[in-house]
Image (cartoon, rainbow, N blue to C red):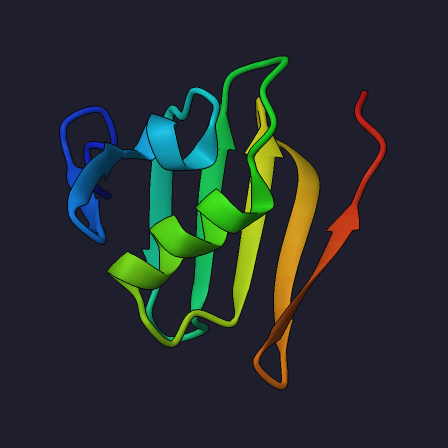
Length: 94
């Protein structure tokens, strides 16, 4: 697990925190290098920017295949890479 509140990511000549890239608050991020899945856990009433979530995940695991986004443990989005294109699937929030 990476402390997303401290870690900065370089994009071009600028450095961005996880919150800057995701454009929301993040409680934690987990990575499964075997399945190539990144999980983002957000507080209630937060939602990621898809482009930022992909950029954040790819900096940690360049071969990421899926990104799962949870809001208070409820799955709200899946970003899936298919043939080098990313697609999104959203789920109804509780």
